Length: 453
Image (cartoon, rainbow, N blue to C red):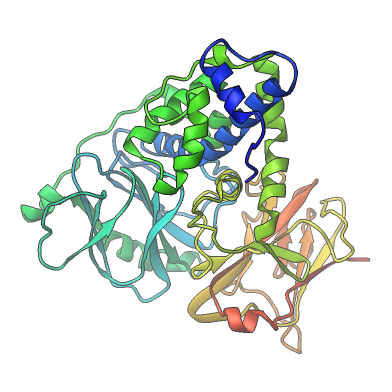
């Protein structure tokens, strides 16, 4: 991320005392600093908004559960699912939002006969751990000095806010009962309850209408004071990493940091107009800044390390939080994406395409793959079959030579076996490869998208 090298000290002094001139370099530098701070804090704020929406209920219901309680999905995401962008539709999720400020939380991970892991995300969207073996785990904040019972493995998370995402692969609708068995064997409770034998009844939560929102829409609708006040408060319980000290020192010049009180009066110019302009330019800046981490795979591209464990790559972190919150690290999964055909033209529902695989994606034992279609809003595309992806468990028909052709079109063909519905306007595809064989991937011919004549 670019550092502001000239006029920064002068700008900081002016901001902290008599304000910044509304024209000239100082004004531009101040707003560049605001934009940088927004990029830095966006993942933390979107995580909190997602948590707030997800726990907005008195008792566990579809897609929601109170804090420190499991949210068991009983069906796959569909076109009406708007909680998280680019949702995965070939695994069944169990999630939980944890608050570790009072005490550690204990999670029991049962045995499973299929792909099943639990991603542990901190408040800044970094993957603190990935659980892959059955066992009993206690999530703690740094500095917790208690002693855990025998057989309980400690997982330290750097923030009080934690998002658990358990992914269990599904082999068709008829496989749901088997997934439900795995879900029922999971358990989550405070450490104090676990010490007392695990006979625990979780307390009721609370519902408020104002917290019934789409998280990304909520955050992008925030004005500067609401956004930075929220970020400053969240940083108290979810402290920035030690590596962030330099940027936080600079952000303090505009009252952004743990526990600071943001005041829009220190910002120059037409605040509402400049803020709107900044947000309008945000996605383009994030995409440009994260391009260094993009790996080309034929006409597809995927984001490489340090995705999921971002360190000080704040632009990269913000892009993933905006476009794919909860992304895994590359050793767990890669997500190649394309929005163009083999000629480089943008994909559109006004045309009909064929997606051709010479061979299937290379995966290690226990892995799987899928291709999912999304509209320009990054959500699933409504269609009469409620079909949103094609995967290695789909009932498609391969060609005689073992290759595979998938039809991409808005209109339903007579034979729907190999049809992946798309929208009437712009759309894009994500290919998910879980536990990829990275060695074989180097020589693999990825699928090609061509317009059908």
